[in-house]
Length: 361
Image (cartoon, rainbow, N blue to C red; front, side, top):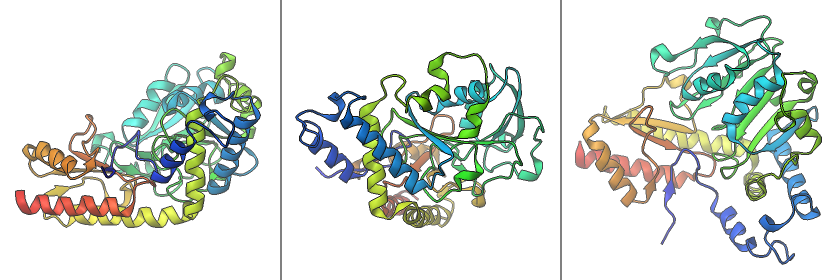
């Protein structure tokens, strides 16, 4: 049976060649007689895998030496709580710019530890745009400024890195990391759950400017202290080794395919193809996001008649197009078209959408 095109927002589709390699190495990794998931995380075999993964990530993201890289368990939501614990004094103000559901989640995780200042929000307009930079009310004494670079649910994306002066910029890049080049040096902290563009669910990448690690932060257990994790090379406790290994395979695949620059070109073509189909449908489909803020990774869209939602999803699944149901917070449909989604998959979706409209319009 041929593999379907999986448009799930996360856990998301993985490159087929990566899955095939993992299958081949599952019982015997590089001739050692055991799977990598069975080997000690402190043994030379896995330590080599970990070192290769970090080196490859640094290479294709252009991470400077003055940034530490961590591979953590817990997901991006855990990072949202650890950021204030590590980089803000108790009760210190922190600025949050909210452009969707996950920006609001970040505030929920931070409130027990910092004085949250909502510097800007686009909630009143339904999260169809990023808040204009001129309207941000930043605090001069803030510990950091937090943004969500790409909102997975609402399909809104920052297309430029906002200037926040000398205050460190912290960004959740879970849904858009490695989709195009970014200037890492303009951020204090970048974090991303791997399960969209970097690998499988279960491992989170955290990129931290090293000078921020000198901050005392707040009273916390050693396991919640990024300084300890840096010193322990992300092995302060037993890490999710299988997930880390698979992410490393994805990194090598991305490099072999041409790196972030090549994926930026592919992603631009895929997004344009899908948005053109929506905008050109004569209102049968619609996307409500302001065009300048439309995500290239997550494309929510709605049919003109909600009664058609169930038939659309059922027929799409029968056609080998999976994971198109929109998030419960927004409804409608959503197509996530991450790096591992081939252009052929987007073309198949567009063809199906046009056929469905011809039959149901």
